[in-house]
Length: 622
Image (cartoon, rainbow, N blue to C red):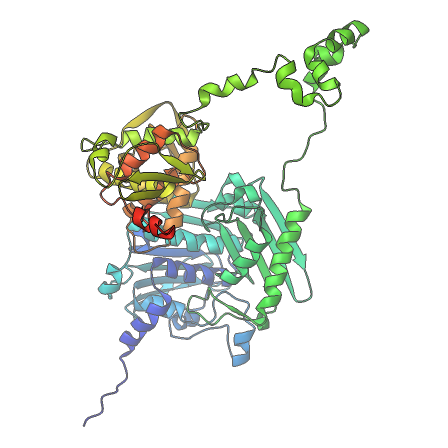
């Protein structure tokens, strides 16, 4: 039989290898920006068109390359960083394997311009599908400009797997931020389709964090700074009140290289133990410096996962450093013992307490109630305060449980969601499965509904999630939710990352009752919101939607619209622990059993459990 194993042609081998390094436009952005940093640049400009699919260009003022180096840089595994195997374990630069430019040239059309300070002219190279089409001298300033056009033009199957432009641009922004955050002493800018997205001036690490993550962190950062013979750690963590529902604002850098490490993240979470909610994630930007020989950064093609020689030491050091920082800096409101000057002018302070005033005060029943020994518990009977409970009587519902704002929202949101085919409580009474009557709430979380054959136990939050989810589906399918126009439009400033999400969701948000209009400079004007959003809470509602949407964004199996529906349903649903009146419970039960799928939440959790009467009888030997 003939031999069947053969060597792949260079162009196919290059495209296969490129797939390990260049998975999407953001991958190329990371490699090109890291090369610019290694070149000693103090200014790095990133330009993208069509979310990187049409153009990715990085311009820097680094040391540049000679004519020979410029040509050699596109050869596979051509690098100036490694000369022997020992060098691989002492890497201090961002790039070192020499595969980035070769991979980029294999899947795009590349134009490179580069010039060293001592050279009179620079070098221009044009490469198409790994083949050099042109090389000539060019007049330019010191530095390098590399542009890659038409990414994956020769691998259409791979191009078809790219996401939408807003989604790909978010990935580019993520990679841009990771590099920019690590080097606050370098100027960075990002321009997308001719519009500047980031303009980050040189400054301190704290200034860079505020530039990138927003001014809301300006006064809410706690400095972390610990040194030892083995390693150093420095950076900032957010105060507990800045914790969010997503991991978005969490950055770990080892020797200035961004890494992903669930192990180290667990160390930081341990330091925040009992300071934040269990489902909260603190903000942190932490840098670890240690001997390169103690880590292996060559375990993953993207170099975002590394191995520590002794990760237990690093874990303990990180946790201790963050705990020490939180203990050292005041993270709770302090008492202000300085007396307000306006208090000094009150009669009670400025005028003397004469004997006449003293006897007048001592004659009141309230004074006597507190001054007589062991008489304080008789206030209700002995003083004019005995009717204080009456003030709260109107706030009680049918069940005798005080209403809350959250409970009132159920009536508004659920009532607003009713359709012409709505099933009334009377209709449910005729249904053999459900019987009407007094409803019971257990632990302010579960609703007991009796029927002829037993009873249902309904989880109020899960039930409300299902109701809202189906309401949103109907809204987008042609029955938009009514918008309550704001008398005075409110502006909301967002981070660049959140701006991209809002722009992507504008159409769906409008159907769901949120009327937002761009106002320039990372700002939107909130013109209207759904009727169930209280006046004054519009900004909070939008911020919660974004946080929850990012929480669901890690799940790739859901569409953008599906993630939005699930985010809103989870966010707006009445939470467990909220007391409900009889009216509110009845509306919730009615609307649940009028849903298309009343038995599960959008995430697959049960909304209720049925118990048979004969099963109960058996339990008691009947």
